[in-house]
Image (tube, rainbow over all chains, first blue to last red; front, side, top):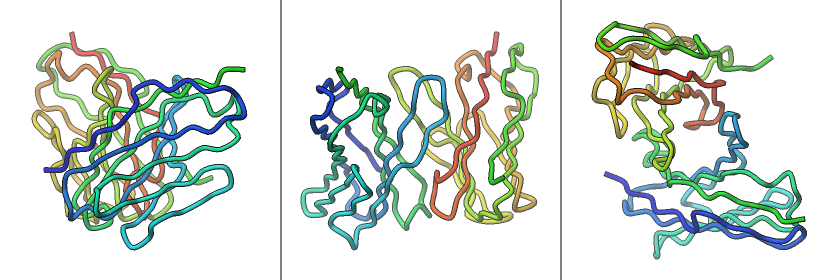
Length: 113
Length: 110
């Protein structure tokens, strides 16, 4: 089955700086890669996703890049703000999700004022 | 308002006593799924369903059952709960997997 590794487990950055979280996956057939943000005590929230026919996708301060050859994808957050503090999860799925979703173990992002 | 609704939000039960956690969505989504979240292990998929009467096992299906008799509902059934099923459970729906999560059900099995 699919295995998703996520790094780092904790990331502390100064407010205004950029943050990058990286994930690798094992199944070359995986083709859908969502990212989630989970604030303390709340439900996960889908913030951006990318499919394998696209190399990069941006949404305001958030971007995701995908390298199919190396089987890794990354979340980039620019101009970080205090409200970006949360746990972020990556995930991977085959068939656009038709074969289920496997998550990384999460990254605790801390924005230092 | 578009939402995924789980019930109950909190449940304490005893080992072996069958229970059902309900999940309902009002967005006409075909894809629904169940996850459990445990400290240090993150989110793990239990079961998912691509459409009515179609269900598939996720990464940790042991000890759980699901059914998808109608599009809007996807209940999670624990026939004989055990303490290792103590966890935070999330239901989700969407056109893509995990697009909208429910508010979560915190289950404790004693």
